[in-house]
Image 1 (cartoon, rainbow, N blue to C red):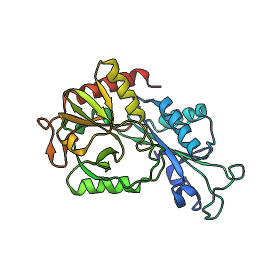
Image 2 (cartoon, rainbow, N blue to C red; image 1 turned 180 degrees about the vertical axis):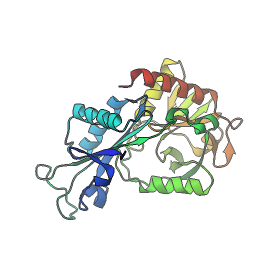
Image 3 (tube, rainbow, N blue to C red; image 1 turned 90 degrees about the vertical axis):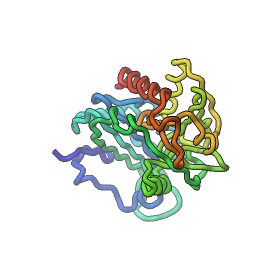
Length: 287
């Protein structure tokens, strides 16, 4: 069966999906997105993703063509028709197509936003082999624009960063600005020293991760010590353990940074426990 996707009010087979060549998401990366995980056929942290979507749209003066309740219904319908048990729902809102290429924003009263959603089936998402052995990361300069708190579709440099890591035989890259780690290419970054969790504080410098918020909440409930501040790559390489969080990887242990092995080279107890707690609590609250 062909995958069913959503395009501007219609559920269509993916091969029939069409967006204008003049869409500003295509021409200017003028769009925002969200990715929501699916476990057991239910959505994880949907409320958080919906709230962040509204914030991103507001920061860019962009309109959403549906309400958040309608968006939830679209997510659920795509999960149902595509029979997703474990996987992802990707959504993207762009400023639409004014019928030609112009730098100025079109009037939203005249040009509706484009809304696209699709699913990705990921059997075994929660039982990832990488979570059992950990991932390796490299460090690269952070040369992105200054509003990383807005979840835009401007992902060229993160893609380049992932390819740089792949060429080094690693899994991902951590980005460095003014000597400090900002975040991973598609995740928030953490180190653990003396069982204290250290992660960069929220600002325009990093994405305000939905999984980050949930994991830190659960860590506090578990009486874990947390320090929100910037840390250097040297601190990271000397840490007892490290991990990243994202909607698609949940809590993922890091076992090597720039060739330096952390601890004994296996996932540490803090990251492993947080992954266990997060998955357990997320399944309970999924909708």
